[in-house]
Structure formats: structure tokens, C-alpha cells
Amino acid sequence: MALGLRDNEGAEGWPSSLVRDVISELGVQGGMAIPLSEMNLMWFAKVAITTAFLGWLGDLQLAGGTLGFTFANVTGFSVLNGLCSAMEPMCGQAYGAKNYQLLRKTLFMAIMLLS
Image (cartoon, rainbow, N blue to C red; front, side, top):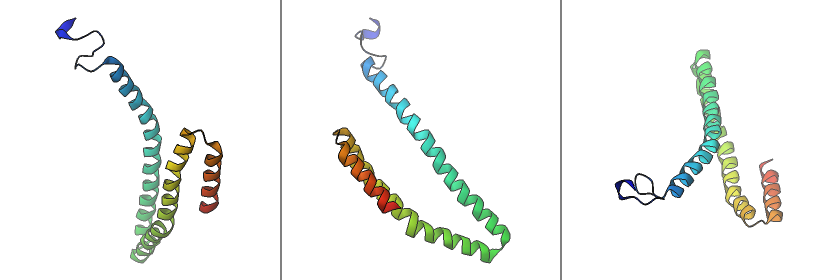
């Protein structure tokens, strides 16, 4: 027993099962976070590249494109994102409670509202 630690403790005094659980959870979270981050970066890159090309066309085109992106973001994308975000906890709770009927109903209603 080195440094006065019990057999089930790591070097910092944390239980080794806790350290394994944390590392495992970080791997799972990273597996979900990386594709989401890449998708968001691609979305912002698309808007940035389009805006850069509009800048080459002229000031009036750049102003019109930027105004269009802003209008679409405020009126469309934000509303859709809010509706999808409201569906997420409801579906998570329904899935956790094994209430698949509510899960199907929530998903169906969200698809109808977002269509």
C-alpha cells in the first residue's frame, strides 16, 4: 500500500471505480459533442463563405444578403430551434419512463409543427 492509500483508491485518493466511470462518461459525451460541433462549424462556415462572396459582388449585395440572413435567423431558425429544444426534455423523460406512446406522440406533433 503506497502513500497510505487503500487498494481501491487512485493516486489522488479518488475511488478507482469513480475515475473509470468519469473517463467512460467523458468518452461518451465526446462522441456526441464532436459531430455536433463539426455540424455547427460547417453551418457557420457556410454563412461566412456566402457573406464573403456577397462582399465581392458589392456593398449593396452584401447589405441585402446580410439583412436576409438576419431576417431568416430571427424569424425562422430561432423559432424552429426553440420548438426543437422544447421537444428534447419531453422526449427524454418519456423515453426514461418507457412511455413510448408519449414519445411517438411528441415526435409526431413536433414534426407537424415544424413542417
